[in-house]
Figure 1 (cartoon, rainbow, N blue to C red):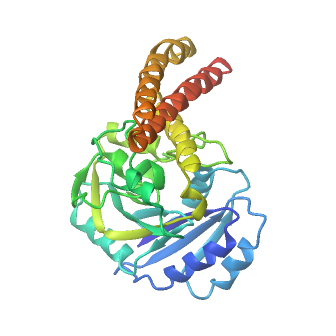
Figure 2 (figure 1 turned 30 degrees about the horizontal axis):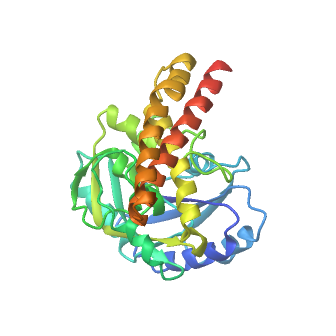
Figure 3 (figure 1 turned 30 degrees about the vertical axis):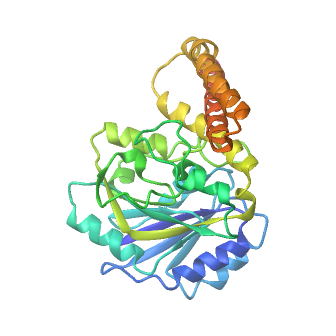
Length: 322
């Protein structure tokens, strides 16, 4: 058996559409259940959940503390079976999604983390400049290159089935051997969606730590969900604001060890500003030579590093207050 955990907050209308898609999901041979965590919703989320109670193997639980990772952790209390799958309330599963994840987990016993494919579902046709994001080449590392992964939370369609670094498992379509959580491991509620300003990557710190512990990850390209991309996300201002949150999340993920507040402040004041200056010069050069694509990518990188400066200061304050 496996359990799917879906946190949700104030997306009743979309949740209804997503749960309708879950009604078409094929059951894996060992069965499954769906746990939806209502993370302090003030809209008709409860009514939507009640309307699907007889159509899905559904359980719901309320988590009043706002934060995606608070909700994920709350959902674990209802998880059953040997595989725990996480999805988002704006991802639409393909019918064979769970069958493919189950097949991968059963055939790869040496792997304990599984990442499925996340494809885009555009609310409106994307403007031409979005190709600068979707078609941007990945450099293969956790870095500041603007690409579709951190911007729209979609996986690289060219990523083949096989072993991957744990941090390439995306939060909207990921599965864990349940024994990981049965040992007491949980998501860090200090990172991830919890309001309008937050560091991106609520699952990244956990995935990196599990990799350090020796857990291996496998990509399952046939286990597909579609991430709904809203109209307002097709604006350059939204993408550039996301670059700051992505920079914050990447910095926090890279400094989860024992770095002291003084070291973090030195990073914010000495190491990161030269990167900001270098990228600012790239922005200037692209601007004066009328190269909008180069300017946009340089601006993304600038915002990414600025997010790192902000998170270095946030972490320093947190560690000083301990």
